[in-house]
Amino acid sequence: MSSTIEITSKGLAAIGYGLAAIGPGIGVGLIFAAVINGTARQPEAQGKLMGIAWQTFVLVEALALLGFVLYFLAG
Image (cartoon, rainbow, N blue to C red; front, side):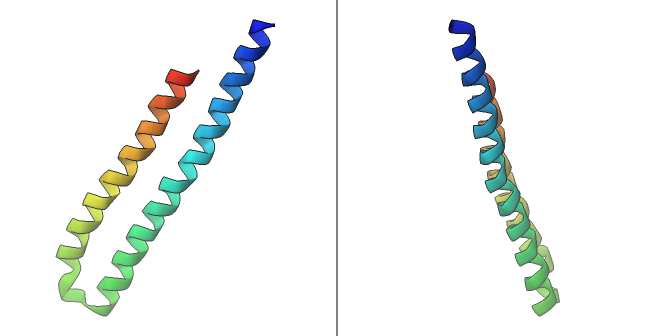
């Protein structure tokens, strides 16, 4: 009986991480879409926009890595 519960909790943890990975994926897409849009509107601001984009990209990916670590802690 405990093995069934263990398999279920690992399965739920995997589903949870999969759902949690959707958020950072969408976030990264929105970040770089905004950079492309901003660069198309003001090409001279590309350097500043890319700096901001990389900083926010790191924050979003840190949340994704946190979810990955929590997946292994739960399993």
